[in-house]
Amino acid sequence: MMTKQDQPKAVTAAMLVVGDEILSGRTKDKNIGTVADFCADLSIDLCEARIVADEIDEIVAAINALRAKYDYVFTSGGIGPTHDDITADAVAKAFGVELNVDQRAIDAMQARFVDYEMTEGRLRMARIPEGGELIDNPVSGAPGIQIENVFVMAGVPKILQAMLESIAPTLKTGVPQYSVFVNSQVGEGVLSAPLAALQSSYQTVKIGSYPQLGSKDYMTQIVMRSSDEKILEQVRHEAQAIVDDLFEKAKKGQGPTI
Amino acid sequence: MMTKQDQPKAVTAAMLVVGDEILSGRTKDKNIGTVADFCADLSIDLCEARIVADEIDEIVAAINALRAKYDYVFTSGGIGPTHDDITADAVAKAFGVELNVDQRAIDAMQARFVDYEMTEGRLRMARIPEGGELIDNPVSGAPGIQIENVFVMAGVPKILQAMLESIAPTLKTGVPQYSVFVNSQVGEGVLSAPLAALQSSYQTVKIGSYPQLGSKDYMTQIVMRSSDEKILEQVRHEAQAIVDDLFEKAKKGQGPTI
Image (tube, rainbow over all chains, first blue to last red; front, side, top):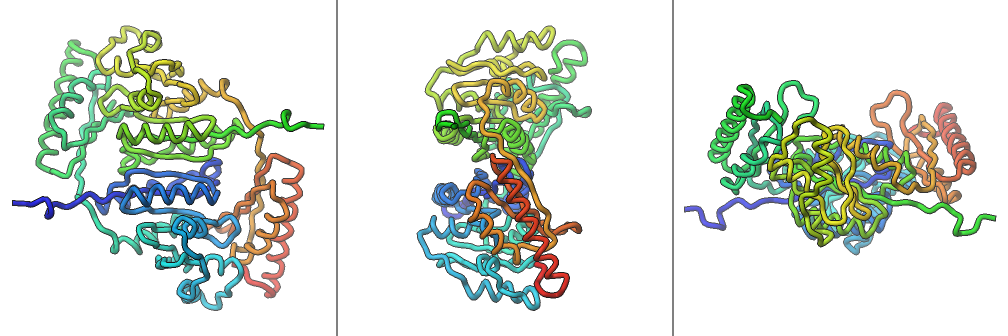
């Protein structure tokens, strides 16, 4: 028998994007989607994401709120060499620790490029909050920072991706979640009642319904997620039967399609 | 002379996306970018964005945190007809008001389509928190909700866009922000010191620096934002001079390019 101790536990995470350029509309964020996929691959539950401006107190407040609530916090943005890169400062402030130039970071940066002069800006990138560990950056050398459960990474998508690959082996993974879907030729207006009943019958399965406006192939996608593949298959089967039945009725003129 | 009272005030906003499908990675969010552009057009300062799961207490907490802090809160997602659409419930709970089927909402839905039967799901979409006003939905009829400073809108991008157009004329607009940029052939490593000095000289201009990894045309884009076009032009001029000078030196072998 499986005891409670043996059961795999959920691992939770939040994402924090630091960046005026996202909030001003100038840049469209892709990093939340990247981290969402990354978490899904590791069976880590991404529970929340936030985007805040380049304002130190806002970043500090978000980091402290999120690190207290979730197993992991992943941040992107604000760790470059210029004056507007203040995420490391905010992390040091959030943890109440010093932020000093770290020889390990200088070594990592100089190992990446020949004749890499440590300009004022690069020394800025070499500042690591006390107690922090480096996150490897094979793209441009300047490291990310791990401090306790917070992973501070770059905003440039290619560098973020590389840093995520660096940290992946060090993370706890959660309970694998499986996902199946049924595409429906009838819309949510008629689906809602039978789907609500289906959800009530299967409390351990999360059933989501997504209208597909403008799709020629189907009107609604029903997505079912669970850690139990057997039950999931059963629910998929029942959802398919609901959809088929409603569509048959609609074709015979015995019921609405939307 | 312009007195303090005459000065236009900043108008602030936050965006809240409700949706498991974004956090699971299944759907990539586009609505934050849409709302960011919308706010920029109206000179509204989008200060923060959050994505939360389809969990009522999480939605309530986010709505209450954001509506207390910003002039406007825009939400997307969770107002469809199915059991997983719980944003209206969360809004009612956040405001401590009743949530009942509203005849105005039924009228709006039935005005949009002929023979529109009010199924259980559609009645769900017609529930409006007490004190709420309808937001017009010319796409699919089912209205959004405005209650005090919170605007509850659809997650389907096309419907969200239409709802934003519906509310735009009702919103206060803020101080117009102008933005200019300079593309730099030298990288942030050498730019950081002179840019920091430039920022110190112009406190009312926000200077951001964005590395363009993989671009053939330039290495860094310097973006400057301000409500004062004259000062902005001056700063742009100085930034261009910094960039030109560093690039000239680099070409002559007298300085680094990155």
